[in-house]
Image (tube, rainbow, N blue to C red; front, side, top):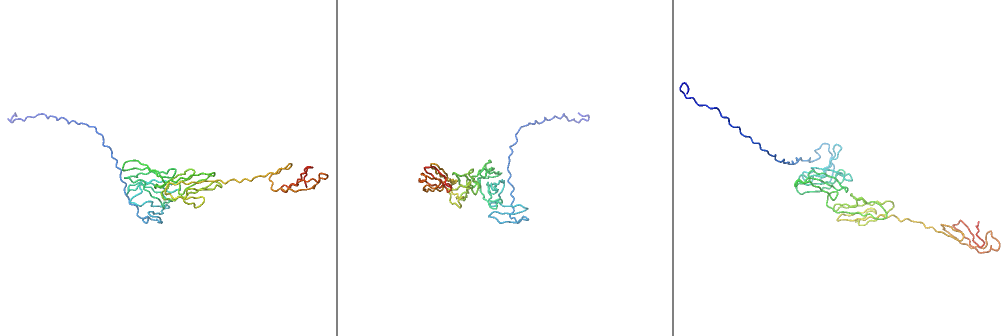
Length: 318
């Protein structure tokens, strides 16, 4: 108790609270989800007139050709929506561009095969159209000039390969050329790729007209089988409506030989005789006496040599 009689409050030392126990729990990070961003759609220039210093040239449907800064600019495909993503390009045997690309609007894998070096005309073909497919294309041409394309199938998440059966990836038929005969030569097709011997079978689009040209070696003649028409003796045309077989025979000319003739007698032998004249005589010449009246023969050979044959002997006549 305090001196003044007031009770003193009891005090006690503070009790320390126990520290909270920290538990560490190991965890694995969530797998990273990769979401492929859609490409930003940029509307193409609607007309070449908006580009300064551009001169527009005429072209076929869906084709625009322009020249700027020394380069020729060509619209290859503007048929459907936005197209032309993920392009890959190779040149065919004639130097014409072959392009694989992705149509963004239709989500299809496409192929453009130009018919000239500037692609003023071309063939467009849908190669794959199931689902969202055809991104990140890569293009090569095989030994026959047929496109081989690797690409990404976005629907199934797969890497895919398309190997075309024609140079334009159109559905078509095979044409086979067979070369035979005693002579030699080559057969080429227009359009490519047949060069036979070598490449003797190729697929061509349905309805195409193919011209084959035979080039013989030397003086060999050319004979065709299986043609729809022969514009010249050395050309053959076929319309591709089914699988076709064309035959070409190269024939060397038969060599001409000159026969030789020989004439022989008891005492005279000559070769290459063209004229022989037999004349009777009665003792003409130098011989005199009893044997001079014997009948003999006067032979003229090629108008060069006169010979008398008689029982008395052989005498040259001068």
